[in-house]
Length: 272
Image 1 (cartoon, helix red, strand yellow):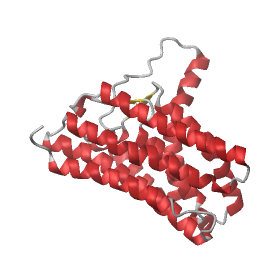
Image 2: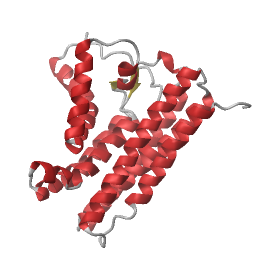
Image 3: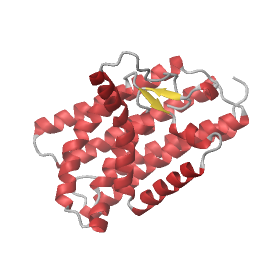
Image 4: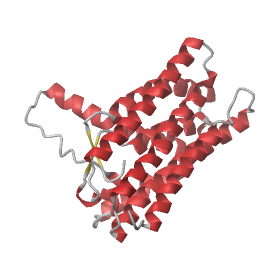
């Protein structure tokens, strides 16, 4: 290795730094923290995971533009993803579970968090073996991509804060009870989806490449508007909808017992 693409490398390292910062800020959440501090650090930690996703998308885009995709970039990307989309979301789950008082439940949550990290690392290791340096030919993810899985957990942290309750008047204890119930169960689901073979569309590539109809532009604008209006609820629905649509689609087709249905190509992603 003699030369390294500077811009894609810096973007990839920005991804890893955001993941580390997300862990650092989540570690400030504790039983002694005030309610305002907990909400602040939950939002900040989750926000850093989302920023890491932006870096993760931009480094691949920059590598394609500069025609500098390489094995080194792929390995570095996976290492940073293991921090931002493996360790950071799992640690965030532990902070979400601090309100559970029963030791058995806390141990179960810690076990699920460990399983999530294991599945994320296995997902990335499989990606390293199956991925080719040229990302142009990849159209689908094989299994739930690790950034989307991390987004599911980060969206729960957003939902856990009082932002939604303040704007909509929803009962804050009810929202937190839902998060407390769904966080461990949902994490277990997305962990298993990461190591599955279910095909997921590459949304970033579909949105950024080629021309789109006027209707598609209007839909994108509406999605951005909804996210701006109610980011916590919108991100929750978007990420969990993306994560669960593939197994639900597979289950519905299985119930129909149509052996001729093609679930689509299962090429590995350009970014994992």
